[in-house]
Length: 327
Ligand code: TXA
Ligand code: MG
Image: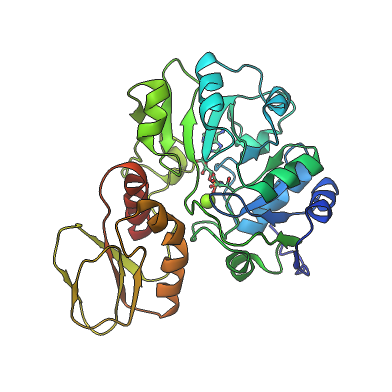
């Protein structure tokens, strides 16, 4: 790919301006309840191609299509199974992405040539205003360079993509803080492809016990059971060492940083410490997680020791992100 000349990335506050830009084929980052997305008109293949270029994203990793309301689902899908309707009733708008049989209107580039399209109706007010005003489905991956830490503020987006995208719509910090849960409904049995902001237990109240597809470390990134299921992802520059929640936290030397939560004590010296929640509030931990990783990374430690989370609800999602950030 040839290097495009740098763009003048503008920080904006007006959803109508942002919507007009999307309709004109521009790339606009926008807030959702999970993380900031890098949006383009999903039905415009040239705009969608620019997303892959701006992020340096491999074309085998498909994009989620964001919708304003349930009625738009007919444009991008050709069949909506009953279980998908039940899940939509319960969890949309919200941090749930469903992979459903795609319609011909969706360019193959959006789905990386797959027969399924990932769709989601976000809950964030500004995202909903934007999607309504744009009046088109909006393809949007997380608004970070490929493989990096997902952005939860407009400043994070600019740090990673300034000069590569047209605009960032500022909506303050994202309240959920981790990406959506992705569930495939392409076969009879639903399968979770990515743990996320909607806890598995909540999903299972509608679907019953559900399979969670796991990354296969023996295989290449392009040959994983689900696309985009990469072993190393969400990764800062420093190496991350997860430790068990009940283990003694011990510094590995003066160039150690610490990512922790709750009241656990830590022994030794640290270059930087981030405590995600003073209690054991997993929602608060998730909301602060990516920003904390960035700020620890900025201190340039040799290693980040990270206290694992209880393996339920959002804790399970956070443990997944820690594991992948540690590669
Ligand atoms: O919360 C989120 O999901 C955010 C906000 C912006 O909505 N988006 C996000 O997108 O995290 P991204 O591109 O960073 O991650 C999307 C992942 C892909 O890597 C892939 O694993 C899965 O969702 N996915 C998307 N479309 C798919 C499809 N058609 N089939 C299977 N998996 C798909
Ligand atoms: Mg991403």
